[in-house]
Amino acid sequence: MAAANPAILLVDDQPANLLSLKEILRDPELDLVTARSGGEALKLILKQDFAVVLLDVNMPDMDGFETAKLIRARDRSKHLPIIFLTAMYTDDLSAARGYSLGAVDYLFKPYVPEILKSKVAVFVDLYNKTEEIRRQSILMREMEQREYETRLTEQRQRLEAQAMLMREEHRISRAILEHAPIGIARLDKSHTVLEINEEFARLFKKEREWLLRKDLFAAIPCLQEDNIIQALEQQQPFFTEGMKVHTETNQLDDKAGRYFDLALWPIEGRDMRMNGAVLLVVDVTERTRLSQQRDDFVATLAHDLQTPVIASDRALELLQETLQEKLSPEQLKLVSMLRDNNRTLLNMIQSLLEIYRYEAGAQPLYFDEVDLQVVVETCVRDLHPIAEKHGIEMRLEVPASTHKVVADPVAVRRVVVNLLDNAIKYTPRGGRIDIIAQNMDGKVSLQITDTGIGISSDALPRLFNRYWHRSDRNLGDRSHKQSCGLGLYLCKQIVDAHSGRIWCESQPGRGSSFTIEFPCAARSLPAVSPVAFLPAVISIADPPDGPIVISPAESEEDIRCQTKTSSA
Ligand code: ADP
Image (cartoon, rainbow, N blue to C red; front, side, top):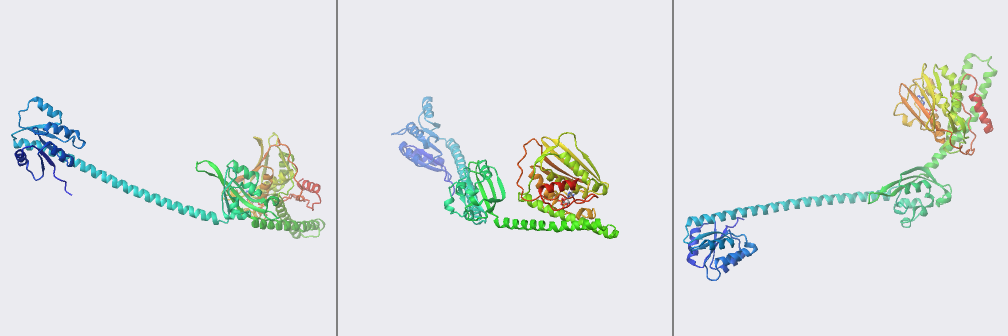
């Protein structure tokens, strides 16, 4: 829509004057509005905007000054330009009065058309520019408003999309939570159950609604384990595998007890502070029982195999001794080979049995104050002939400082012999094995470093796993024929049972370094664990030339003696 023409208000009580003004100012781009009195002019000004008012000073009811005063008094027109028209001679005083009432100019009758037109043109121009600025600012405001609305709409759409996504994610998480075959519970710091899924209630044979808002440990006493309570109260993560739930507290009508994998980790509350935890429980009873059955089977098998192997070794030994003269060198070599194989088999069987006992917590450990130096020296002396046979140098370095640890000497010997035996197996002829004992920071350590084939970095993390071994034929028969991956696993079990540490550093092609570390003997001796099985006879993989005494154990005393004999 085109903007309206600027309007000019002409106020005079004389129609002839108005006519002449209109005639002079006639312009198709101007809107000339006339009023015959001050009152009429004021009414028009109330309804419409004008670029300028030409106001006759001398009018009968309300003169020009009076009218101007009222024009200025109104908000809408207080800035309206006023040009006074007068026929009278105007002295400085009345001019000053006119200006004080807001006049911007005076025009004297008779008018000079050019002057009149040019004075009016100034105000028309001003009005047009002001209007233009006003229009522009309205346009700008409209544009800003439109932009703001667009941004607002986009923002709303984004928020709606996010909310929808969150609702969807929430729905999926709830569905997972609901249908997962894992018991899930959310607890607050004081053990109150805030949320649980169906599986959790099912695992503990409880009603879901009944469990809500109850103290977890009061509602399910079989979970009342110190380390779980402590982890929850201290807001620490906690994880345990195959936790046995004791029959007297499990209330699950399951006399044999049940086994759970359990994980607990702290979560943040709305105030971003840790104030609760999520507890996950998986029933692993079937898996644990199967694994126990398998272990029991392997242990029984190993145990039953022991007697015939020992018997066969005795028979071969007898054969070796009594028929020495009658057998040909080939036959004697064959018998010797059979005895070697028997020993390997027996070693494996005994490792398996020992591992089984450690895992079942049934391996008796006879703690005593043990001088590690003495144990190590004995082992080195025993294995020295084998090392020599394979062209490997062995160096023992034990500083004078005390190396006493609280340990089971037989078990520690088992570890040292295993490590030395491996070092010999995996070090080629011409290599070296360094054995260094140290006493530092309340710990006694023993480091066995070889210059052998080494272990690759990807194998290192699995080195102490059960059954992990490498079929490496680099060293011919020596390296792989007796490997079944039980030795290091057993070492770890023994070291763990002593609250010690074992680790390995290695560089393929350059050698390996195994370290065991035990706390110093400052602490009091732990109680002797109950005897559940008779300990196995210690044997070494590749014996020195003299015969190793292998005989079935009759008593623990017997075993100790045999061990001593075999290692002497
Ligand atoms: P095993 O009882 O059958 O000898 P271990 O558990 O003692 O088995 O050793 C497992 C594997 O670790 C071996 O097969 C071998 O590959 C590697 N290993 C152990 N000790 C050394 C060593 N000193 N140097 C190189 N490899 C070694």
